[in-house]
Length: 191
Image (cartoon, rainbow, N blue to C red; front, side, top):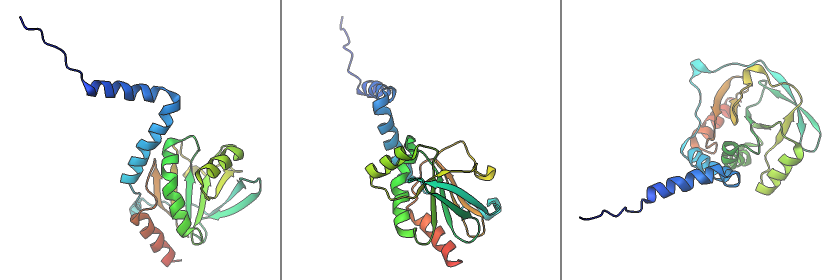
């Protein structure tokens, strides 16, 4: 009688290792960031169809800067705004920041960039310095307008000069794409 020997199954071992790495907190976040970076590289936001675009009433967003200063920024009345709700502990947020940084480098003189977080400014500053980002990050001093409030982060908006939401995107995305740049360029031509 012949006894069958069991072959070692690499797929099962890889699956078990993957599960263990996701359970261990020190390895979970880096793995989630890589997965979200892959997703962001594959997915680029696009404009909402005109029939689904929503107008918001112009409002003054009262914000605190990282150094403790205050700014009132008018949204929906005169300039194109890129608005992002994010956090330093959020893997999808971290994954899309490099693409937002590249977009900011090219459009910061033409578009108002607002990256909003509820975190401690010291934590945010340390995070930005470590990553080498120059993005303008603020803490809200007023309640987020209900039309923009979402429980999911990241949630990002592109709002035109008249307060119309042109892009609304949740989750990691590639903001430094041809599609997004085309939307910005088209909005800025009408400025």
